[in-house]
View 1 (cartoon, helix red, strand yellow):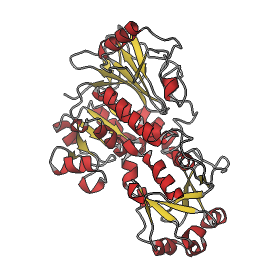
View 2 (spheres, one colour):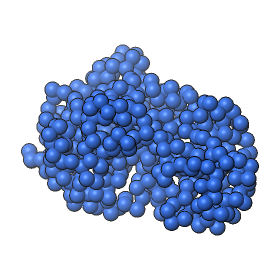
View 3 (cartoon, helix red, strand yellow):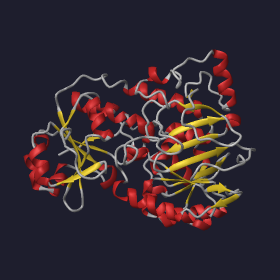
View 4 (cartoon, rainbow, N blue to C red):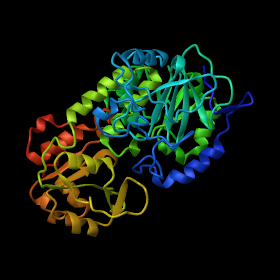
Length: 454
């Protein structure tokens, strides 16, 4: 059954959200991949009060901090168990559940009983209410009331712009490709039956196999979805990336069909593990919080803390070449430079001062790139969007100046393959790859990096 969307006032549903979509697009269209969770850099400022993207009163990047209660007080074992039961949770140790409810939207007839613990993610928040209701808050995107199976939307007025998502979710249209691996990692791939990419557009196995076996169907790209298919397949949720903000009329049309649109902003996270932690948001939609917590803990343990790897003193330039010959580099605040630093390297453009705009990338001239990176120990080419390099000659073919680069002369040019952008579940493994590159480690253990041969 196609679910309701929009807000409810005086007993009526308002489905037309086009004006709001146009305004939002105008505000964000120039910064679709910006770092941070919004233009004011304050996560969770959606709803009744400003809220951190982490467990509200529990800001910090350590598991130790996130294990504490949001209110700063430890519940008794009995109270924790009651909180878990009221929230509809089943986690044995409630590793994902906190008792803090500060900032939770007020819902008529429903009492907030907890919130999701987050360690790195800053761009979403989840509150739990009695009887299994949940609210997802994604700054700059909106709030979403998740209604459990067999339950009704609470009576009374809902907060402004709150969308309704009804469980169980059986026919999701997924157009935010970075979310696919996260849903797959918690065993929820069967809930996604409609994809914005066909078989040849995927570089990860889960959706490729599902499409080949007919368990998933291509329903058109994000900007041109097959509306008739969405209706025929009883689509119950459309998950979009911020690219949908370039096509507000499409979002409006989908919502006018009664299909809620959830906008994924994981690419705005400053930490790689923050992107991976979005697995918990999708877990909340599918009631798979336990699975998500276990998976996330494994990934966090794999890459370790910020001090796991010693500094090597080696400099790294991470870049790509655009079709107009400009060099595209990452802002210092982006998660890629952070991974380079955590791997023991030094990001060459870490001292870039307040570049204009809010995008995660910055375009500079080849001459400017040359002046900074000609003596870099390593060049890492970003092949996730524009495609990889066959060999060093192809790189030199893009600009003859590359012949003079130290990394080219010494054979220290590497590249990231296309699968990394879609592999949000394990993107932090690039830290391990970078360390292997920097230390001459075992290349058979690489996940995303490969050396560009002569």
